[in-house]
Length: 324
Ligand code: SF4
Image (cartoon, rainbow, N blue to C red; front, side, top):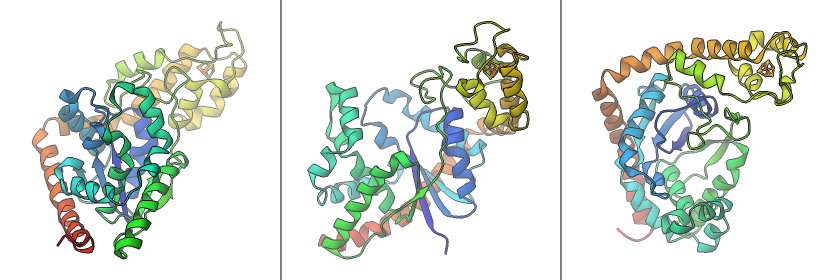
């Protein structure tokens, strides 16, 4: 039997190169080897309660990108977290076995509390419990994470251990499936690529729009004129070239160091390579966008399949906890 993998992502709307290189490509690869469940975690998005008016269109756009990138509903379950409401019940039940002190010491809680001091809500502190409920509701055994997310998964494992000790073996302890998620730096050359920071390149842009975005990228700050020798190792355009322009990469580095290529030409090469790589994706996305009912059906089917697993787990949990 295949191992079950679970992963969730917040509904952030149209996906960008950072999402694609950092997560989506990995999701697509895993679906061929594992029993994968991928969720758009819309309830998690409510912890910051920013603009909920965009929530539904963000889910739709994100799903279009996931499907166009190759996630196949025949190979994996794709669904929206809140469409399987059992997760909220399990969240409450797991909350009863999770000491508050464990949650208060989570570094991301402290960071988020600093970011939104006006809205340090209960959902924010309980976020790791909801994350644990997401995973164990489906009895997932492997969770694709980067090194930086290991502490979160460790907390989920602690909650599982505590539950199993109190009520008997119910959930498998989820294991990290360590994955080299490349941290894609944004066009500003400083921070991780993110929609919020506006330093991103959306996958669904046209080739012309992609070129315009790439043109705004910060390069080697020491290279002020075309004649100045460059330092590709500090240049973010060069970093991006490595994902899309592998064959030409070594040539670009040398030409940059010798000032044989200018940054404008270099950026054109990058945009060309990104456009070539994403051409099949963009074609599929356009076809999918012409049939929005298909996306709705994928999500409804996914929720139905996930719901069967979820209800079975919840019956077991309630029995163990003496509720039934
Ligand atoms: Fe960066 Fe390319 Fe300019 Fe060199 S030529 S500094 S690698 S953009």
